[in-house]
Length: 413
Ligand SMILES: Nc1nc2c(ncn2[C@@H]2O[C@H](COP(=O)(O)OP(=O)(O)OP(=O)(O)O)[C@@H](O)[C@H]2O)c(=O)[nH]1
Image 1 (cartoon, rainbow, N blue to C red):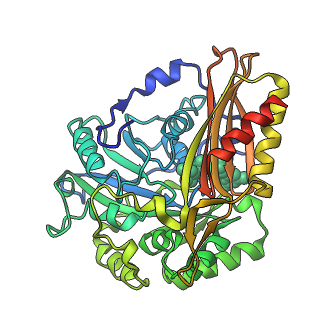
Image 2 (cartoon, protein in one colour):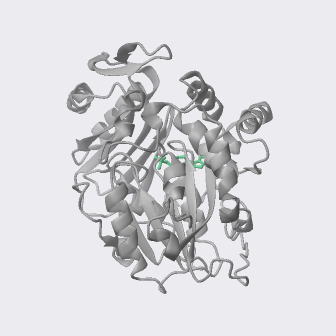
């Protein structure tokens, strides 16, 4: 979709009747009901709809948390705004609308997909227009969850909803920013924070943390206690007094993250944010329409289409994903330059930070691929669908057409 087009709202009922079912791995270990109740009795928003921003680096678990909230019995009618980097909005919609087995839960009233590009910069104008359009349906929902891209700087997004006249667009009069929730991946978060500190101290994960009102240290099932403590320590050095909750698949009582009214602590947000070293490239003021994130240390995205697979091709695809995620096998792309900490341009090495995909087999199996750095899983989400062409979306450095060629070659082997 063209970045200038205002996205249409997605009709969730269509997706549900398409027979998309819950990813099996996401059902494992899920409690019957979290049964958190959110107190809606006190209206501190003056009739405006509260909005919570879910941020966190690529693959930290934002959509998993979102799906969990949507299926919770909380009484809210929730509208969802999803902003994606990489052409994955359709996969995300499948992801968040898939937990239909939980009949106690509620799915989103409205889903607004802001496709490829970050609401903090490249799709800001169309994003604002789409949110204004969403607000024409005010009354149909009473809470908004906004999932940012994993590369977003949440501060300028939060600023869209500030009441302060200096910053706010018209959105601040209709929507009350309730809080910014930052998910940190317990497996890769520490490495990411350290890396972002090394690069001028202004990497995305630091910005996300500095802006947060609450941190969820997610994927605690995958690491040892030592690692959790080290990551918590690193978080606290950036945002000293922030509440940190340890979670597995975003499981926690919703009163820890919704209806916080952290809106009134916005000045603190600005203060924390201002304490980060600030680099011109990352300044809020930048050319309209410029996609800064395409230049963030050479991070780009690409989509490779997948044919309907035979059984043997499915195994070959699996092997190709492993090689791509684990070994960074392919030649460096001389055209894709990135900057090291001394500011010197150097060729980007292949490093896949995030990989998502969907494919069908000719036997009618439909499967979703989810990869975060070196970890990945393939989950069967349906059967007896009419097989369609699939796709795999990669986000990282050193991506290029050579990957598409190598995948095609691998599938022919
Ligand atoms: N083991 C484990 N896996 C998790 C947990 N939370 C999420 N995952 C898995 O991690 C992968 C990424 O989760 P998502 O919820 O899609 O992450 P995200 O932050 O929305 O990803 P982006 O939108 O690409 O930035 C998926 O395969 C999830 O099933 C967790 O607590 N434990």
